[in-house]
Each structure stands twice: as C-alpha cells, then as structure tokens.
Length: 448
Image (tube, rainbow, N blue to C red; front, top):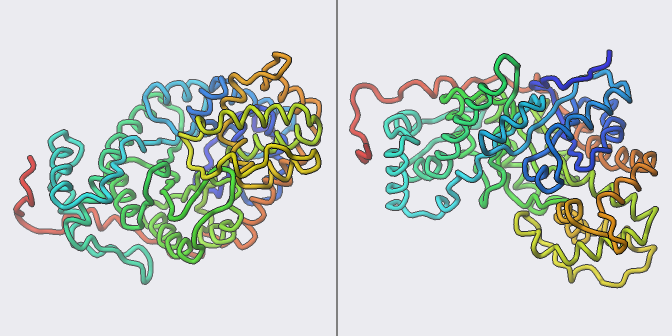
C-alpha cells in the first residue's frame, strides 16, 4: 500500500532526514530500508526555509512525490522543525505537517547557571509576578523530594537554590511551550499531531535534574510530548563527530534515558545528530525504542560530494564562495572550524578529502549552505542553487548511492546494539505531582 501522506510515528524508534535541496528522499529510503527506524522524510526548520528560500509546501511536495514515485509502502513522518511563533505553527500545519518541534530556546535563561542566590530569587519573583511561574506549586511539588525514576536512580532538589536555578533557567521556556502547544491544537483542529520539545540550542547543558524538572512540568502543564531534545553534555558541533568524554556522556545519557521513560514515556531526541559516529552505539544501546535522531546538513554535504566528483570547477567556485562567507554565517551555529585550517591551494585529487572528510572543511561548507543556495552566483552569473540541482539531477544515481552509504552508516551504528524498550521496567512519576506538604505552608519569598 502506497503511504502517500505523512502519519504519526508515536513511540517507534525514528530518524529524521533533512533535505535542503528536495532531491534526497530516494537515497534516504535506501538508507532506512531494513532497519527498525521509522523515517521522517519531510523535515525542515524555519531557519532552513528562510535560508533556502523554500516554502513548507515545497518540502512536503518533494517528500510526497518521492514516496509516490518510489512506491514507498511504510509509514513516514513530516517534522515542522524548530518552531518559535504562532505564525510558524500555522504555516507548517497548513502544509500538512504532522510532527511539530517546539523550540523555546529563546526563552531559556542561560545566565541562571551562574547566578547567585539573590539574583535567582529576584528573577524567580519577577517570573511569578508575570504569571510565568506559580511560587507555591514549584516549591510544593519539588523542594526536598526524592524522585525515583529507575531502580537505583533517584534525584532530589536538595535546597532552594538548586530548585530556583532550574525554575529560572527553564520556566519561561516551559511557559512559552505551553502557549505553542495551544496554537498547534488550534491549527490542527480535528487532525492528529505529535509534539517534540527542543531545548538543545542553549549555551549550557541540560543536567539530568533539570531534565527531570522539564519532564514533570510538561506533564503538569498538560503538554503531551512524543520526544524531547535536551542539550547534552559535550560538544554536538555541526557536521562532525562528537567532541567530549565518552564515559561521561554515557553516564549522563543513562540518566536522561531513565527520566524520559519515567516522565513520559517519550523518546530522547538527538539534535545535530549528523555524523556523531562515536556516540551511536551508546545511544542505540541505552535508548531502547525511545529514540529519535535528527539530521539535516549532512545530506546537503553529500550532495556537494557528488558535485566534487563530477564537476570540480563548480565545486572549487562553491568552496571559494563559502570561504568568504564562513565568518559571517558561523554566527548562528555551534562550530569551531577556522578557514586557515584548510589550505587555499588543494590538488583536484585531494579536494574531497579536505572538504568532505576533514572536520574544518565540512563545517565551512555546512554552515554556509544558506548563502550558497539563496544568493551565491557562479562566475557565469548562474545561481549556485540552479547548478547544484542540475548536477544532482544529472547524477541522481550517484547522489542516491552516497546518501545510502553515509546515512546507512548512521543507522547501522545506532541499531547494531539495540535494546528494546520492553526490556526496561516501566515507571510512572505521577506521584510527584501530589502535594508533598500537608496543611498550610509559609511561602518562601512571598513573591506574589
């Protein structure tokens, strides 16, 4: 049966395939076939739409057309990624998207991590005054409580500073997420939908204790999520492997996974998930089926790999343009490459290695995609976007092949050591929402 329209994927293990060019879905299909992952073929963020000058309908139509042409007979999803406003929601809902990623990162108070107690109290009371937080609910539900999320895994907000830090850091984001959830409900009407919350684009990691606060507050606020993307410890830079201590990551990830099972269950979502090869075995083993991985720019880079192999002159023009744009375009990305890491003069036979296998070369190409696709011109005055699309259309088989290999490597590492969710005990954290204190309490600060 041909699944011509996106559907809900629920708690199935899933993988998001970003397609900035509208030509990658056949290769994505080849990569995901035979794996336990449900694919998300239509996936684009509002930032990507602006930088590629595409419409939500363009993204959806590219996926639907490929599904029909390839006679794909399985379920597939459509992710309206990194939504921040009501207009974002309505645009994507109108195009038929079924999966909505709420991105409240603008409302995360990053300085809370380093605030002293007095500053935290003032910030907290200001949020109470604005109706963002309820002082009594926050303290009654969390302060001093031992919260067990798995056998041998418990957390406690030991003192008010620890609790204030979590509430101040994420309270505004949760308040905005609740508003956006309401907008999604209105925009979808009778249509079913699913929601992810993303707090990964923040300056500091989400500690397991903060994740627990987020998960329980979402439950209390009535925001039903199928997945949540924390900001994990270590560096998830664009387009390259993980940078950080693997043992520390594994320890933190085990706690995050236990919290996701207890507070939902919901899937842990790995953003900037492209090319994190060293982490995939850990993530796949510890997540069970409660896993969503999101990739985007790596499929664009594989498109440039095809250009490099088939039209070196065009690839050199794109590289030269990217080098002039990198310092400006990197401002909105978490990357560490500098153009000086890659030589100006590179022989033809070394171009692919320097720009598609080398970390700095990949990041230079990765973060400049918007400039390349929205305004970059070849020396003959033809837009780069037009030439790239023509090249990939002419070499559709090669593009499909490199996508199958590159993204297939992602998936093989993720499911090679898989563990089923059924092997984990089922816990419920509902008890945490019952009042801890009996009778009347003295409100700690009297903010209200």
